[in-house]
Length: 328
Ligand code: UDP
Image (cartoon, rainbow, N blue to C red):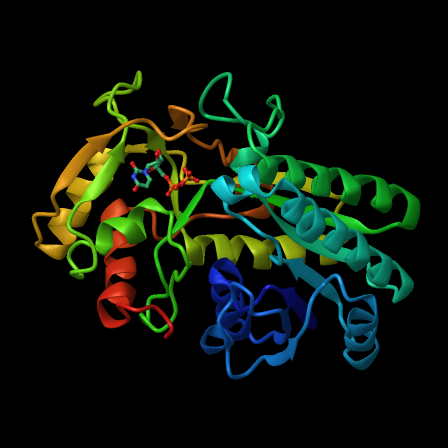
């Protein structure tokens, strides 16, 4: 089976490629390398540098390779940036996916697994969040991902394409080998920012608000290991190959940790005091985001393997300690 991974040089994409290749799959990668890293491309994958908004380029890859299914990670994913440059998000995420679907339909490729996000829900009415809960994004990023889901739905009805949308909660950690990991520029995620302190690149970590209605006043998130996310993509491709209908699944551990708990665990893992300072709340941060992933467990047979926060942070630390400047 040949799987095309769009955005396979990015954080979650590269980890998924590693798991696919370990599972014996044949993998083709497309990435424009704007945020992805050439060094994260698995040596056994066939790599095409290009943009999903380039129809001619996509058609050429589909015609050259016999693709059975697509896994689509090629999107902009920074919440803050999406509020400052909404049209960049509409262009890359929505227009890009429209061109991709044109090309898939024209080339007879009918299965796609797609990275969606907890940001499709916006401020939750309750936790844990179910797939059937209200979707009311509070930022452009979440809005474009929700619109992408809807585009798959209607194109699926018209052209017989089937999709699985995976709504991730907080992706984190790194490959067990420590050879690939998270490298965003600029970095905005909590765990890599915390680890910049023991790495000597930052003096303290900021806690964005400690007056939330949570057990210690700081925000609660559901942190899920990137390799567990990768495994869910493989199960989702199999689910579609077995002829199942289009579906949407949450992916999280179902357990929430506060920002302070994450910092404390990082102190334990790194044996560094990691000074922290409370700063004002970050706009648009819900107090709590925790997934119910019962549906993925039941229907896909998914079971996270790296669900302890200590293990998640240990794998991230192995990567960041040995690559303080990321892939550069
Ligand atoms: N956060 C923080 N300090 C930072 C970065 C993030 O306190 O320097 C908090 C943020 O407010 C949120 C949690 O850590 O409650 C996780 O943020 P991240 O940006 O990693 O993921 P998000 O939940 O926004 O997808």
